[in-house]
Length: 584
Ligand code: C2E
Ligand code: CA
Ligand code: CA
Picture (cartoon, rainbow, N blue to C red):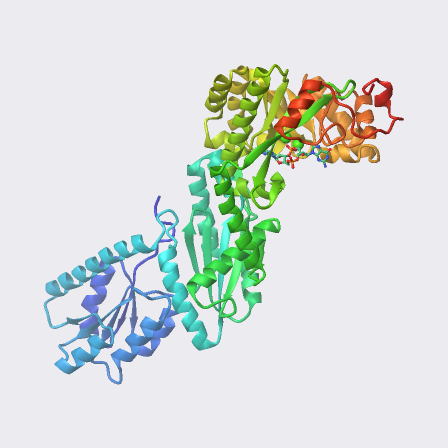
């Protein structure tokens, strides 16, 4: 891909004598330069406002002109760190030469030479400069987007902070991270991901002013450095503008992609003057923006730091926990509503923490989902469930199927089919002994990718359930194509079943959908006899919830399995369920 941010080369000649500067002007033009010819040195600074010259040729003999002073001012311009300043004219005396080199003039071009020699000399200078620039560009820019990379950014921040200090202004660092970008890579492939990143870079570049820097510092992370701002409000306006321009969908290979970003803002001097602190604080604020619902910006606040260090230590603890095998599997029975017979169970992970005791998945799975540990955790749950099943069976306990939850990442990060085959073989199980639960959102996000995998699992006999059904955006067209055998009605609809007629309608709808597509329906989160009775009246045959049993450890589950049949834990005797003979 060509560098979208490439620009034309610019040279400035500051000279009065045309005899001296005309050949130079022509040579530069012939080399593709856009040349500004100034008659007076004071004009340089106004040109620098909207142009970054590669070369400035100064006539050292110009009256009243202190070359050194101008070269210093050019070098002070933030936009011209690579500008090469050369002096031109007839040979200056030794003292002037020393003074010029001291002030940053890189070389002197003697114009007394022949036209051929001059052309040669200038061509060599341009070539050397271009070679150096190319190497510099590679070292300081990101290959994909052409944006400054971390190295160059650090340099710019350093300069910006000290300049702002002198001018009594502020610098803002906006750390931008695309929301759920990994999903794009996972589902549409890295090439699409790369193109999207390049497009985002272009939009960001278009959104920030000439003085400000947009850098790419990692996969989907960018930093926007705003120089010389007066107040936090300036940074907020910029961040709002960025969120806004990203709302226009991206068209990548004919696909319309919607992208949002979370932005964390740190300001110098208030949030720190060192690069390390500013970057760290912007990062903290960015995480806060993610946690608050993404697609927004957030300023750094001191109180955030504690929270982040909690997250970090939790992240480390999770790795440790996996190594120490601290994840245990609890099982929650699924029960035939009319009889209380156990028809299956769901495996639910818990973390047996050495200090904190039993930790619920809600406290660590979101982070595990983010850092990818979810795959290893769910995999260990799958393995333990299979081993447990064969252990129960070897003791003569009859066990119907076990349902295991798998996350989106499972479909992309490991060969799920091969792993399931391996475990079934190792534990002497049939495919139909296990069911895999995928959430509705997982299924609907990338149906084309996962349908073939589901079909392969299906051909092994493995049961497939859609979890939390009703909370996502299922498309009926896809539902028909999914080889799914079970729909699980989300707890949210069961909860108010008795009081909310809308929820009741949804439940009835899901049940008839199940009937049309010949799928089993399991209602989750059934806590009361009233809910169970209503479900039964609507012909929902299998229920799971605290009413019959909370998730319990393997030993306890073994006992329940031996009994084979459960009683509701509540004893409100008036319920239908009793008349139907569930409880003796
Ligand atoms: P889920 O798959 O929807 O699992 C059902 C959740 O509802 C479980 O929460 C269960 O304990 C809870 N529950 C069951 N009956 C009742 C009830 O009557 N009332 C109430 N209030 N809650 C009930 P848990 O165990 O905290 O798990 C939460 C979620 O974490 C699960 O939701 C599942 O999405 C995820 N999860 C759990 N274990 C695993 C795992 O091994 N792998 C993956 N990928 N996700 C898991
Ligand atoms: Ca589940
Ligand atoms: Ca569920």
